[in-house]
Amino acid sequence: MLEWPDLTLPPINLWNAPKQFWIDNMSLTQEDIREKLRGIPEIDLLEILEITSEDIVARFEDRIEDKRDYFEADLEND
Image (cartoon, rainbow, N blue to C red; front, side, top):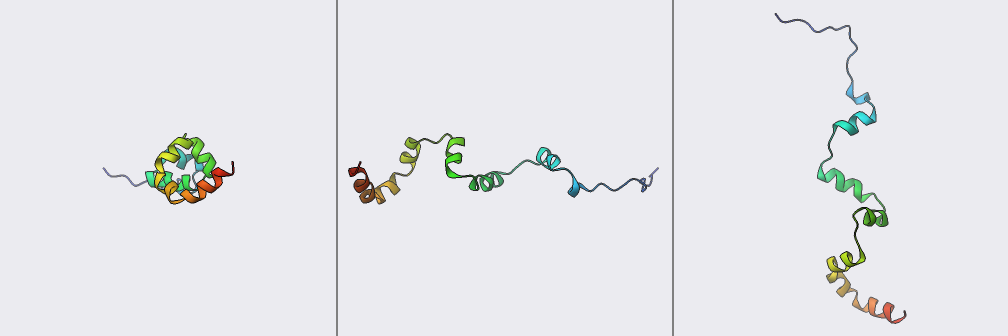
């Protein structure tokens, strides 16, 4: 037999749940993670991702070539 719900109980309002509830019960999507990482200072992000100068040079060879004149002038002064 179908029973009516107990309407004397207070309604559950998940919007007022503690922040930790949402942290524990919601998984972040890859896009959510990328969005949060965009707000982290660059130095911190490099450290978190364990990115080295070698990694940067290898990944951005084309940009380094585009700035060749700048690097040549700057490196000659050292």
